[in-house]
Length: 223
Image (cartoon, rainbow, N blue to C red; front, side, top):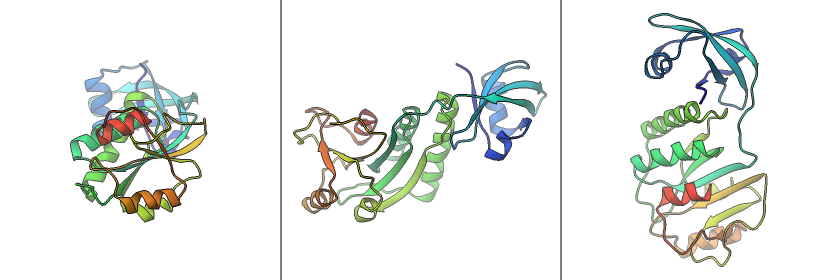
């Protein structure tokens, strides 16, 4: 698959892009790209262009910016509202959600949440999202939001919001939509007051089957 490099929006409208540091090491040491090879250049906000490697020296490379390329973005604008799992599992969740085209991963503090994420954790997750964009070729780096309380989260829900609940009578999603929100609660389950809060917000419960899934598995399966 063609390699993808995430650059700034300003760089994407220039005629050439210079590559150094970690991106250089990944593309030209690990992946061993060479002069003449093609790659995708994306700005992390939805724009993509074709690129061609013009020069490579021991520390930097120059890539010419070419024609507009397909964005490779999903037709569904999906936000995941997720209870925070352990960091290693959160990393896996963000990586796979990025590959699947999720637009946003917003962490939520539920009453039975066993974890929280600090600023350094969120920064690491954002780096993982950027790396996943480079791996899968999409053009948008998903937003990774710091944990917030359920009431604050509800205020950000869109008109089509679903809750993954194994007790729900509806299997899967009842209709195709272009924009949706998906809530994944903690592994200990939701408290009655949280369920009432979601009900008042017109969140629709759906199930993905009879088995109880871990947070990250449910989020990826739902996506």
